[in-house]
Image (cartoon, rainbow, N blue to C red; front, side):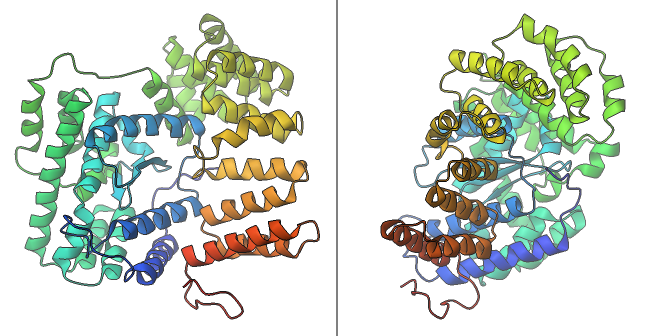
Length: 483
């Protein structure tokens, strides 16, 4: 179950900073400078990756990331479409959605880009959302994190304590104060650097938008909407505290839009359906939102069905979605919603028929395969088919704890203890619970069900986890060292 976060807890901020501090200290001296990169000594790309995955795991640990396969699929479709234009082969970008109503987005070194649900809901079309994503890609590509560290002329550990606190603080004043403290610059130097980075990120982001043919005027419109926000929107608006506006920013972007021919606002209708999913996920007053939905189009029926499904009112959800599904049975979102409602009514066979028909239409769609496999495993049926569906998805869902949890359950049901141990260890490592990950491996190594080769593989994996996630007292007595 996902938790709606209004403000990030102090314990979370402290733990994520300590985690990043540990891996930074452990790996900071091992990277060699990269030719042609002015910041390679300050923050090598290898160290960027460590900071990125450490931050991502800590977010997963506290349930701050939305792991819905439909959401993941769409946001990475959009992000990859934009990032391809950078020709950046030095890093792999990862895009994710943060379960927060605050209006913000952030880029973490290593190519990790987070978008708060509040920001996505505030946007009006895909081009507006793409403008923010392009801007964050630009921050990473231009290595602004490394530039801030280099300008600070200090250890990058306190630097990152400030930056991470700045990203996740619950109000604008705390955010900027933490950022300034971490960077350690004079107030004016800090302002100048941030403004300079924002201008560069806008310029490069505009190029990304232009090459991807997204409507630049919508990028300008969205920034204008945030700048002039009032009321409830302004209270949740954190974006401008971490991405301050500067003179002529909107006009500069708007001017560039005049040279576009037939730009895109929405590349597909996925944006609308995913926005429905996310908006409902942070909705507390379900009944009031149901009353406010008066439109009768397919998008509104989808959202209404989501609301009824959230309150486990499967009868009304069924009555709403059935006409929409019959009218458009090939629609991925309507069909998945219909199938989930059937499953909620314990009509397992009917739900699986809908999903398998959908799979015949879209045989390569990973979300459909995952959904079918999850239903089969949770109900303990046709496990061989579930395994056939899940195993090809490993690379696609390696950063999704739901995938690791469900495939671990599959292997347990099939009494494949070796594969189950590997999957459970990966699951706990992704949730930043390194002790539990190692305990799973230790128990498997001691098990009489493992043969010599399997135990050797498990011991190797254990050492890899220890060395990839150094703890304060490494090396551990009795363990092999990482050197």
